[in-house]
Image (cartoon, rainbow, N blue to C red):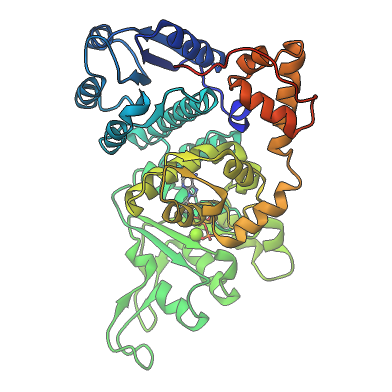
Amino acid sequence: MAGDSTYRAGCEHLVVQVDDDSAARRIVSDLLTDAGCSVRSFSSGKEVIEYLHGHGKADCILLDVRLPDVDGLSLFQLLRNDYPGIPVILMTGFGNVDQAVSAMTQGAYYYFTKPVDLLLLRRTVCELLEKIRLQRQIFEMTKARANFGLIGQSNAIRETIRRVKLVADLQTTVLITGETGTGKELVARAIHEGGRRCGQPFIAFNCAAIPDTLLESELFGYEKGAFTGAGHSKPGKFELADRGTLFLDEIGDLPSALQAKLLRVLEDREVERLGGVHMKKVDVRFLAATHHSPSDLLTGDRFRQDLYYRLASFEIRLPPLRERVDDLPLLVFHFLGELNRTCRRTVQVVNPAVMDFFTNYPWPGNIRELRNMLETAVICCPGREMQLEHLPGPARSAAVCNRADLPALSQLEREAVTRALEQAKGNRTVAARLLGISRNQVRYRIKKYGLAEDSEESGSGVHTS
Ligand SMILES: Nc1ncnc2c1ncn2[C@@H]1O[C@H](COP(=O)(O)OP(=O)(O)OP(=O)(O)O)[C@@H](O)[C@H]1O
Ligand SMILES: [Mg+2]
């Protein structure tokens, strides 16, 4: 039931079905049209091949393996070879399960044995089409690196991308703010790559990761003998970033003595190594980032105001993931594609309960945490569907706690069955048709939710045969 309300395909998607049984064709076609898909039906292998060879469109093919003119499995092989980008779902009679399983290993997306569980069929097709839609969006986004690998469609990420494009080709210093894991470094790289310094060095320097005593020599470099242990001379980060970009990460952690020195470099664009005697001109574009908000940074005297205003000539604030949950499906499928490759898994579908959990989870570690959680889940998921049980332990416990706050799936199911029975004036066979499930399944739910006396009633099921 959950799938019914959660998944709805967009009618821009075209499902092609091939089945010689006209009644089964009509049931499946009505079911999928009702779910928001466009459906094109063919009754033989020859017809569908002619259609595809004539450049007919298909986002997915539902193929009955028992066809009058060709063996469905040979047709499947032909489709895999000639149209590898179109996923194929097989429908098979009970005796052909072995063949269907072997077809799965050859790349079929799914197979159903007849009589087909219509609810599951509808859910599977809608999930597949949603996945195709997300993959197309991700492709568009990464095409020609138009958005520098920044995935998302929310207003917040669009605004970020707009500001990155505005400033990338200038020499302006940019301060990037946002909680941990929101993509500050990714945005810094995007600014570098989107501007004319692309191809020149991009040096990232984390001011919080280096002991205070070493910060100055790392940034400015030193000459041989400048201090005990300086056995050779070494250029600093300013020099290494010459002609390129220096990204000063966690700038809020720079000690105050160095803040004054940095301000001078920003003003004069000159540096002198420790123990050196010459000032050297450097041509560097500066980007900085902090997880502190500007008001936190400027509270007390921890951070110099003049340096702040010099760095924040232009500011890009990255919103936390919980404020842009619209981006979750895209991010999840983007990372799934990457993780399936690196972890050698084939996770195709994310169970709605997992997406519900993702939508309600506060994501303190933001996109980094999402990626890490997905990595664990992908590793733990042996099949095609990611379930709550595949998430890391702490997240799983949070999901169980959170579920108390969500409308329970069973509640949605109960409402759907009640409404269908009302519309069908109590006729379970009609209600079953409306819901796209079997009459027995309706009977089971009536009993489960105590909706009516469990009396017998005649009528045929809606399974295809
Ligand atoms: N919009 C996005 N699209 C795709 N991947 C993203 C996006 N934003 C962040 N990421 C990914 O999330 C991870 C964390 O991003 P990044 O290191 O840039 O965050 P950060 O804000 O610098 O974190 P921290 O403050 O902890 O250093 C990286 O793997 C990055 O590629
Ligand atoms: Mg970072």
